Length: 388
Image (tube, rainbow, N blue to C red; front, side, top):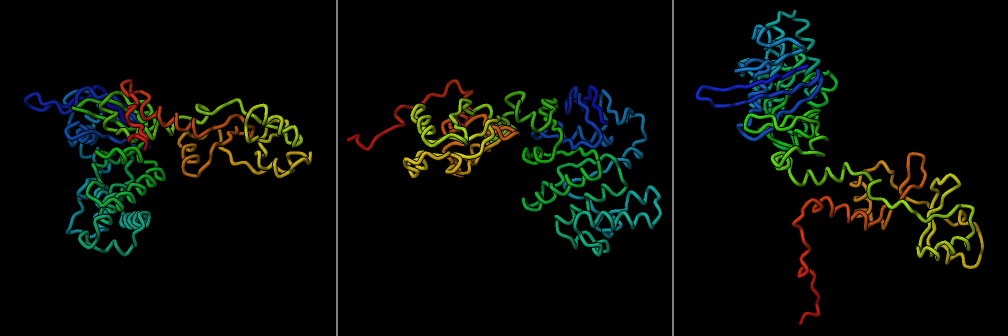
């Protein structure tokens, strides 16, 4: 566990870099520090390995105050990856990877074994170990930088905007790679970025900083669902928040619960009476336990004519959506796949509701403008061709 207890960093001239930071995160978590330039995110990260010493407060690693540790020994226990990679150009890739294990006096066989094992994990050939950094692409160099930080089996890895200078495709590939390695190896990673998409895709926890203060510390889901203030909302972005509202709102919240249905052992004549009485053109067919089996519509009944057969003989399969699904899933199904409405079933396949196009429109409206008290429909927006 890493704990920040009332951490402040104030430079001469009373220049506040970080003020009263309190947070803690568990071993094996991927924690992202994010904020605008000058927010204190990099300062917070660099205080963990004492590249910067705090002015006040304490940072604990597994209950031990880092100020009580030898800073060289501390840094050898913590991996570090920077944007510029920092590979030594006069050293081979192999020599770069085993730099810290060599300082820790590992035997040569163990050094070779860890270098070969790690380079394979980042999908590079073992033959690259004999190359020099300048013979590799930017993305390949950054992969070497990542595994160099892992080579001494440090439990904590600090990453200072490591993918910021890479093209989007290479960046996305490395993001997936580092998250995969982190989960497989159980490392604690503290990652600095200014990219909210990167933070949301990688983090178990996100620390949002502004002007040296910790504004919000929460999971990505928690931040998207409950941004603490206007600064967080702007940093996250309106589009992401709208998507999140649709993602976290359940189909249960918008479905109609009074569904007109018919038993599968009913006759066609009985089904027609139910349709007529309730003024509907379709019935969902269920059994005695309300398990959904299919549907019939008015055209199915019309084709049968006066034959008084069971509805189960003419019913069609019914596509449905689970009540645990998100509104976003329902929006996709109804708008992109062309469904007029969708029956909703629970985990036992029992019919529990109906999602309609109108309900989806209402949900979209609520997510976009529901909290805007000043929103007003412009009556002049609706016009007709018969204006002349």
